[in-house]
Length: 235
Image 1 (tube, one colour):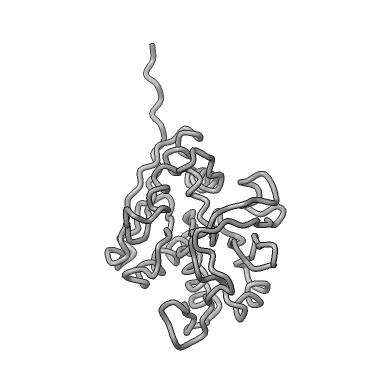
Image 2 (cartoon, one colour):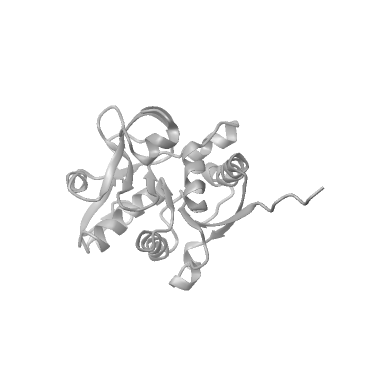
């Protein structure tokens, strides 16, 4: 019998400060393993603590980058460096919760020229593009409406989903209007019209969600966006 062909191995950088008590951090390896099995690849992932991300060399060789939840990060600059590296080099990128928030900050600073763009959780000056939510979404779930034809809608195969959150911050009103005129497009909204997902046009896969879809893996449910993320890394 001829030997079985070797599975393709995808190297994934998980950028964030690992904490075993964080539910999303418990879920991410399982979500990656499940998605890899579904598309018949091997997911080889490294947790990169943000203080360890100090230069572009720390990111070379990865097929995809995921900026994970649980911010504020120990080294915000490390997270922003990883996001910018993925964006500028067309490396598939996924940001959830804190990763979503920081991809918005990175885009505001480095593409739109908002040098003072900041996060209300850690900054007191400048234009706070990430602000406090009117209602906390810590351990809550909600309905999200998806943009037809978007990467996220294609991944889920439908235009209305329900997912869980663990956050108190989202895109501030001062920046929501700016996004409507940029290539970083809103592609998911809650029923009140607040932005809950974004993706970058003219990039193979640059997607962020405020909700933590990866936690589905802990219930033995599919995480469609993680599978789409790995499929993008295959290419």
